Image (cartoon, rainbow, N blue to C red; front, side):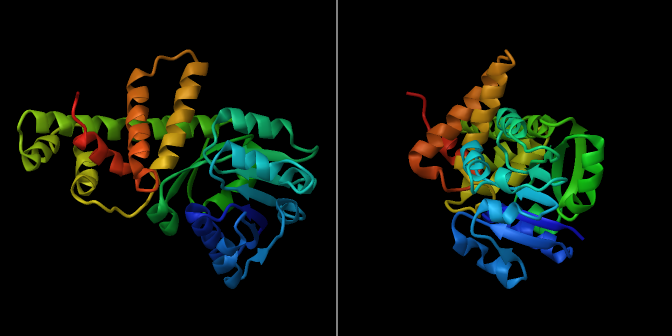
Length: 288
């Protein structure tokens, strides 16, 4: 079993850390809000006062943070993880921060340390079941070292060299964000045509949107949904997709439109709700 430092024990991170503990790994945990590590400490994890302290002596250092800014704050400085990484350690960056943030972090690694970018696809149910999909970028040797650990969380897929995990995650999230926006507009079209909502869902059951329509139906009918993935985080990821498209010279006009719906939903107060709540924002909107 491995000695692991885990930084970022929010909704996803705490569940990931729990699974690693259950698999028999030794964990040191850190979170900016220390109270959020209490359950993990009760399960046998050791607490650290700083990111540096967490990283010292760890074979693997895992970061699961909100965004690139949070990653930089945790990584840099005399109390950051980069100051604590030991020779031979491997840093596993599992947040969704985009390729640029991964490259910036990799360029600052101390000598004789290695890095994998390994963002995850899935939400609370998947992490609790150990059914995440993990897109891993890095060398083959580093992937082989980390693969047994990652299998406690789900299915790790080696998608290429360092940075390709972040790229793969943006492609995956772009599909989710785009399909959700399309579903909302299709249902809005049905409303405008006077088609009853039940009939619209019956029609969609025979289209490429069938699975998403069935899965998201409750989001069009209920005011409060369990928060599997906060809308504000989906908007952050949509921004990463747009930035990556612009840097690559790609015209992503459909995805920009989907991002605009997420932004409008956040401005309407849905930021802390599940991201599927964007459907209700689309359906309430009328073209002026």
